[in-house]
Amino acid sequence: MKEELFPSFSIIVPEIDESLSFLNHTDVKDIVKDIATRKCLKVSNDHPHDLVIAADTVVVINNQIIGKPKDQKDAVRMLKMLSNKTHYVYTGYAINKEGKLVTGVVETEVIFNELSEELINSYVASGSPLDKAGAYGYQDNEQYHLIKKIIGSHHNVIGFPTEEIKEDIKKNYSL
Figure 1 (cartoon, one colour):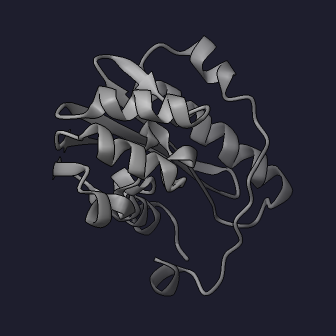
Figure 2: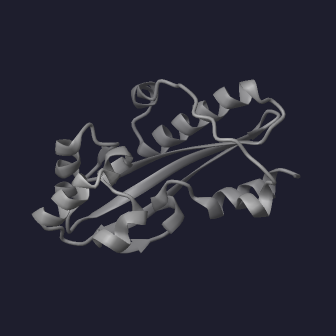
């Protein structure tokens, strides 16, 4: 995306209280969109003439939102919960340039393989799942064979739905 749309960019991690979104909304799509919007607007305040893109991703299984694991034990619990089941990945995104705000949400269905205790423990010991929603990363699938099938955007499962964001930028902003 960088080469196609932007000659350069910066990554800025804004400090926001994500728990407010959970207090103000009950629908997962509204929650991730609200978090992304608040991140986007916070960065836009300091960069009012720049195109700002923000996103937030969660994993949902059985109507339960699963964020990032607190520790290795929590990661093991999450992976056991996802094993041999279908879950959904939701990414809310917000794009802002000079006060023109565009938001969206992408939903992807993910079907996991059955994960053995040995595989889960090995994967968690690698440290990779500890900073990811749902305690897994799409990029780890080749080595650990976590995912059986993805229905929808593969980029969304990574946490940044590039195709949808590119379309919204092309449609709504003249760059």
